[in-house]
Every structure is written in structure tokens, then in C-alpha cells.
Image 1 (cartoon, rainbow, N blue to C red):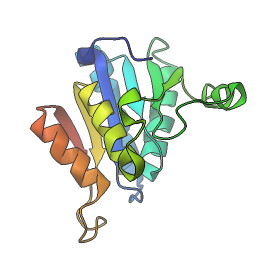
Image 2 (cartoon, rainbow, N blue to C red):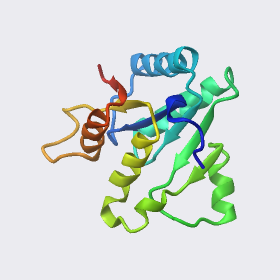
Image 3 (cartoon, rainbow, N blue to C red):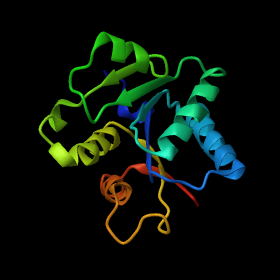
Image 4 (spheres, helix red, strand yellow):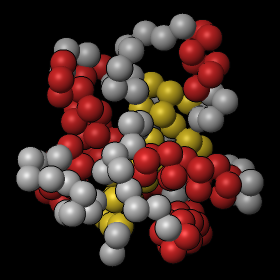
Length: 160
């Protein structure tokens, strides 16, 4: 479970669909590496369900070869209790996983509450929010982004 100081922590969230380009991959990689070098970030919190989450996990995993001390944590929005088999599967990609107790009865809001949990536990948020992708309804990413601003988090936003 997350035990490190939030000053050393960064979370990721973003639109389900993204415009994945080589430029985005490069900028994301540079932003993550800069946080490790300049801000001593060593803990990265991940959700799921989006192309951006997948891209961030790929980038952090690649960077981990150069900085083996960093940790990838998967924050579950589903399955408060998981089998050993599922945990072993998750630990192929992450150093740890946990289910925030406060979202146990959140129902349909579990993903919003999970994002709040990650934001609360982080100093930095790397976000992909494209107004053109998020349609007229208020997207989960927009809700999380507004919350991160309200909480005074340092936000690195894509596309810039």
C-alpha cells in the first residue's frame, strides 16, 4: 500500500481515447524523467481503463530500467478483495496494488473516487484532457482535473 510521502508521488489520469503520437510519447517520457531527477518522485499511481493509463505505464516501465528504485502502484476501483492469481498477474506490471477502503460503497462513482484517492496521495498529476475528445457531458477526466486544481496539485497537462 502507499506509504511514501506525497511529495514523492505522481498520479496519472486521462481521457479513455487519446491522440497517441511520437511527440506525445517523447514529451510524456521527458516529463516523467524530469520529475524523477528534479523532484525526487519515486512513486507513480495508476488507474486503468484509458489509452493514456496504458501509455503512462509503458513509459514508466521503460524509465524504470534506468531508475530501478521507482515504484508503480495500481490503485483498483473494483475488486476490494482479489485472488492470489489476479494479484500475481497485476504484479507482473506493478510493484503493488491496493483498493482504497473509502470507495468500497461508491457504486458507479468508484472510478471518480479512485481518481480522488490518487490525487489526494500525490503532489503531481500528469493528465491527458482533450476538450475535443471529451464530449458535452462532464467527463471523469474533467471531474478529476477540476479536483486536482482545487487541491492545489502540480499538474502537467497533455495535449499542451
